[in-house]
Length: 360
Image (cartoon, rainbow, N blue to C red; front, side):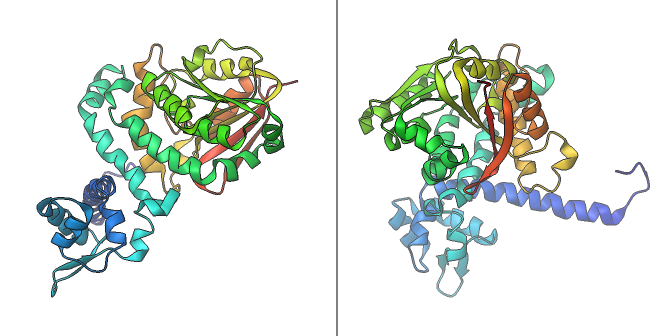
């Protein structure tokens, strides 16, 4: 940082170039989201170079908007175009990062957040003036988006990669224990685990009626008898010594205040019970996040959503998505957890996996 007031023309030119890149990048983020939601990326991944009419027909879409979209992603460097034949082609190297077949590498999933955040910009502007946040109900597509992203992540690595992070958890689940997911959203993690470990009992808690309804519907569809769900404020679980293991997946930073949630989780665990807390991979200190490739996106999503929904709640603290490792460890310890360790899962580079225990 410098306080030199001399005007640096070269710095201004560099900044101009960067800001034009930001503008174009934001535009391409929306185009990538469109490509994902309309199925165009998945369609194009299976096509040879094709005209806009052929691509639209294959995707079951109208040709004119498809053509304009194709031109946008062409000049954006995402799709190749042959001027002689007027055909478009999605390179295999790009398809591997944009299609549903890419799994957790699918960047189009996360890019949907740009459109979602834009929907609430006016309310966020007002929140800047009042400090009152934006209520969860304003994010009309959030459950759908988070369910899609978390489903992909859970399907790819929950049983394979996350369960082994907790010592002896797989054996305990095979034998039969009580497991809870706090802030479970649409409940897919609960149902996956219930299906994989029929001897154990799984319970999901979330404040959203809509999300809990989806969890119950999926459990019924899968014929699960060992998965159950409750609509409940996670800061007021009201459970004592009930569960052997509790997990929270990217849920704590959205809460009004994390400390009562940690206290509720601690109380709900049986003595010696384990807590798995999954939160974004970041430092509490902004200067230590400069080199993290996802940091600008993380802070932006927090500004537009995570911090806002927390502030909008009663006595909301608004810790934000980047509240970070140091703060999380400090608050876990203050809540009474011991043996606090941080781990990482190979399928999920954006999150830290915090392991801790309630004293026996």
